[in-house]
Image (spheres, each protein chain N blue to C red):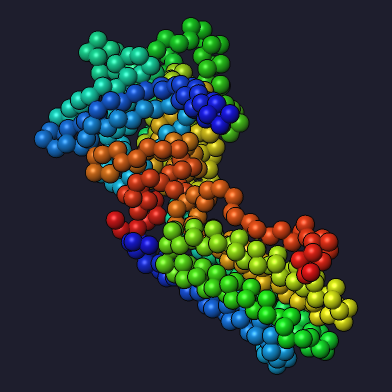
Length: 271
Length: 242
């Protein structure tokens, strides 16, 4: 009887493991900036419809890893990436892959809100237009409205869509950037400290938004605020000196992490 | 606590909590020991002292809670720090209850005194109190050292106290059946025995909390229990006394 129940537990666990679907898989990822090595053989998988937070002290490699996920490092002179990163089954460093297409599938939101110096409407419509996602004006209107809805900004801007995007408040600008990222229907959204330039209220709105976006997108977020990582993510990965130290359920990371370095970092202690 | 916080005042706040817990522990231990001594020697003055000391523990518990709440609000503690603070809140509550039970025992001294209790009635109680006090003292030592092994050992020993309590229960019932004049003092003594047995339970709860603080997980398995006094009937006792 006991044996059977143990076997049943094993089976349930196996099933649970198999149920996790990975949207992106990073295998032995290393990054070099010229001679300097920034990441050491990182193996980190990003789960589908999950918010994964990357934490760690400055210079630990968390932003570097984030940028490998949509090849933003390509734009940096002398940067070299080794290892393998896949999006679903596609190797994103395959020479045949279209990087513009990749970045439509893996969108990005930056630290400082950076709307185009155009109208609110044009900020959101820009991506869908260059990717040819809307044929008629009505289609484009629908995409703009639904993207602004998803970014929680629609009610605040629906009466002034033709006004400049740069005239919005910082928090609104950041949500506009999220709407812009969402407009091209990406599969993954990367966020590099999206709230570090925002006040606590605007931060809360973006965090609420991240929570809602999770239903439709896979999100990877770099944050310096440990409390933010604890609040918004389901999985947390801790980086230190270019190594992935620990990746775990966020609930476990912030109550009883396995690694001493994680423990010291999140508790604000010297190692 | 192998390393210190970057913000040193945070360490001070945590140290304050553990220092106050240790002080509460010392007071609670003294109150329990005094209450039993007052009962055994029918010392009304000592009983009065125990009763008046309870307010010290009440105040300390409130202060620990206030400090813990402020620390949580200001520092947003996580992991071991969070468990340290939650542990302090829980242990303070346990020690406050220990004080209440000591006080209740002390209150009964006057009643027992006036009913003219024979000396032999309290002997079993003394033994029970001795074991409980050891349990309490050790658990407070474990709080200072955070030894996971010792916390586990204490938890596993609570059944000894339970077993003695059950046999004391039978013994007091026997005295009551022997002589109805024993009923009043023996009933009070039963309550005292129950108080002391409960103190053992609180010591065990504290051991479990310390285990959690140190490891982040709850100790596995049911804690051993040997309190069968709930099923003792008079037929058992007559048999036992014959």
